[in-house]
Image (cartoon, rainbow, N blue to C red; front, top):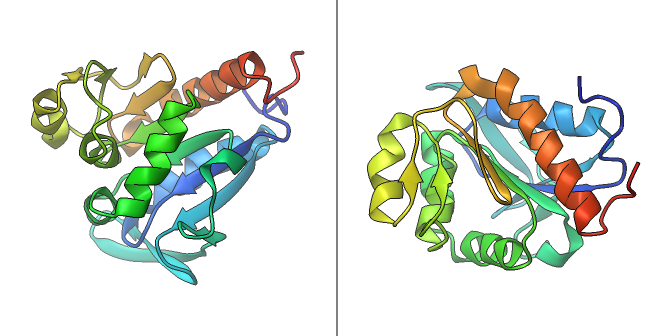
Length: 192
């Protein structure tokens, strides 16, 4: 199990807004926290954001920083949860697009699950990439020049992607491995 503090001190931005799929935030966040990462919820607005369990309201979560307050240079990695409404709102948010473009330009690791890839598509970052997502996004990814695979977990360079909450048991260890490996290579983590 990856709960050996392999990410001690790594700063991870979880970019999300209202109506995200709750388990796609909470389970990866727990895995990151357990591995020693410092996670922060970054959203277009302050206050709290609403989680969802499919189409039913779930818990609310405190926003640590708004996209106006957050500087991509202050983070070592990014996680993008899904949820149809969350992903649809974020993809059209210019500040979210700018944030993820700066993270990608720096070669930092990005983890994304379910509908989360919409932000990557709308930010023009999918061209030439291989990834997975919820099956309804496959045309979006292909039309943006990416290669879509129907697999529970896909790693492509500094990205890891997954299809849905059912893939989280495979996704979380792969995310931790990517963040640890690239964190060490990029000098954001101490080598063991």
